[in-house]
Length: 523
Image (cartoon, one colour):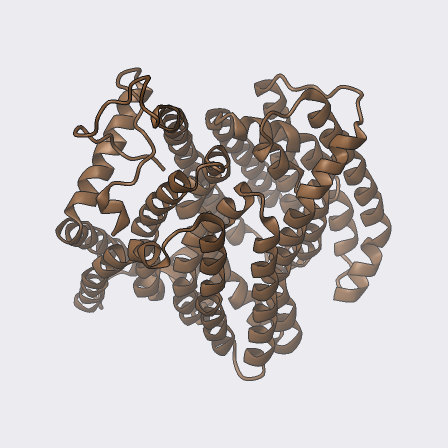
């Protein structure tokens, strides 16, 4: 989100009208970069741990165990949205939240979570009957305890985020994921079945809350301010609607595919989406974790917001494009090597969905900009359109094949993108053409990389899949970097300079760099 300073730029003195904006950019940019570095550690570390745990559990547990948890997650993910109610985002964008504001958010969230836990206890048998899966009763009841833990962590997590204290957030996430994964693997090895996954979830959530309260001094007072509650509700109404639509987008296709094509097809579909989500979360989570706090601090400066958005977009595309193209090219080896040969039918689905991932890697920033501008209602419109498109794609596609479902979802993702761009232009005044130019050079650099990957796979067709996967992936990465250096040398140099500058600041040297977008970041 930051860029290296321009040595030719005049120094902003006290008389300069740009001094306040520059000073703010310096502070926000430096803190955002430090936050992004810790976010890198948290996202990659936690995802690698989760991947390792997932592979181990997959070899220890029967596929039906994962099926039960997958069914439960559809319901639980919906209820978790109601637990948070968008309050955490409201706290992040609030200019100066006082203790009464924070305590009101805490107690409302805790009361809501307790009510939802009780409701889940009594409705679990109905959900189990709907899915015709008796094991769901106990699973849903135990996992619903996580609602209270989630509510208890919402306010302190938002406070750490708005203060750019991503080191504490990273430490909490890494430790809790490790402890939960360890508990799950040990119980699975002892034959606990589905309860190993239940325990994994509860240990992860519980340990995260304990670590969180050790890292922050927030303690709620016995305060409920009706005025603050009304402000929370006014902001969170749009956010809650967006989150509900997001849940619908992420689950309506699974419901339709499972109902029309059966559980086996749903299993292949789930694995393909899981690969996409893991890659997306690693690639975009690094920057999206700091996006809302950063854009919130810039919300009254449209020009600064646009420059930061351009920079973030180009960095994201440069990171995500080669990864998703690699998934597209290497999926025939990647899926069987990681998940086992029984998942070969998921390979073409994974390849199609990797094209969707490229859009996902950028649209995260669109949402943060709209939230920071106080316009969550615009994101709600986009989410509603996406949910409708997802349902239509799943319903129409499932009448013929699972592959058609994935193809139609790709069409939906790119077809709705102009709507997002329209809203971004409305809120920030950005040039859509310049925004799209952030894609051109990184995407062009993936073409020779894809060719290198295909060539290596063809040459090593008779060798071990693991070796072929490693060598082809290495070749693609090297060729992409070389191509990007040739196509966009200035951007590569400025990004490297930015990272070196961030490293010096972490060591205590150097001044923070302003949040500006150099020419290389604007096409």
